[in-house]
Amino acid sequence: MPKFTQEQKIYRRIQKQFSKATKDYAMFDDGDKILVALSGGKDSLTLLELMSERSRIFKPSIKIVAAHVTMVNIPYKTDPIFLRTFCDTLGVELHIVESGFDASTDTRKSPCFLCSWNRRKALFTLAQELGCNKIALGHNMDDFIETMLMNITFQGAFSAMAPVMAMEKFPITIIRPLCLVNENNVAEYAAERNFPPQIKNCPYENDSNRKAMKELLAHLESLNPEARYNLWGAMSNIQQSLLPPKIEKKNKQQ
Image (tube, rainbow, N blue to C red; front, side):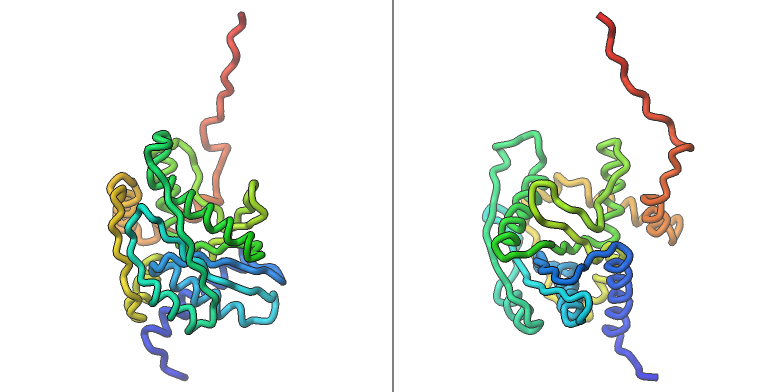
């Protein structure tokens, strides 16, 4: 039996979860051209490695390109030289585009929402220019669960993100191949690979509730080590008959 290094063991674990997600949610179709969003963080770097490896499999045949979006008014620092070298090593074409937003133009939306939407819009535009029909994002299982907890707590809605989502206004499908991957596994792999940390200097970082949701998830796991998997399962195991029925508001008669 060959002995695997710690890096190889972690990668094989992530690769198994990646393969299960892409098969269970039918993320790939023959002939896909997929734009992989490369922020420079640990998740996107790991995703690109996995997607690059997967693109060398014959069926279903897929092609990939990578895109990095810089926000002119958000000083997230990622070394473009490192990104180009990283992509060149994998044999993946990299495109770098700029975007930005003015938080004062729409006070109804949070700066985090505006930043995310403008990044996505830049990706949608580039994907269409390059003839891509799908965009791969690096959201992991923790991101899904934290979003669900935020939506329940602050929106009063039981929702999260979809592993596969066809956009209504763009001929693009979003896929999230890391949806079954534990963030701790990605962090371990990034440490073994010596991925450079992304420097975050976002002026709106403290306005987001995601940090609190990370702490809540960690607390739930301290109570039950299987909490994350139960929360994931709950998203597809909604027992409607055991929940309060929705009461339709009746219009007042004149």
